[in-house]
Image (cartoon, rainbow, N blue to C red):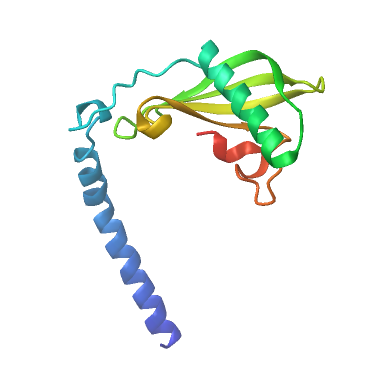
Length: 155
């Protein structure tokens, strides 16, 4: 293609995309169905960030991961500055998630930030809530499972 023809083709594609955008956005808004109203509904009844069961689950899974994958006896011994950072950040049609952050003290005496989320139906075979977490500075996987500085563990 010649430069003028290529430029014209790109311009036409951009105009078509811009003209379709309002229709697509309107269609997406109309299709939102709150997760509580589905045929197999979620109830959005998940524990809060400071719930003892949530913090225990983070601690237990952290210790298991350290022992199994890193041959480390590192554990989380305490939490403070626990905060909710988001509740259902992507809207009502996604399954309920609560995003949290805290400062954890590990058994080596170092205070580290931990980002975690409580998610409905992520427990054993979807029957209960589950958690995902990332401890800053200890996401040691070569591929950085939660990206740099635990970015993928946050909303």
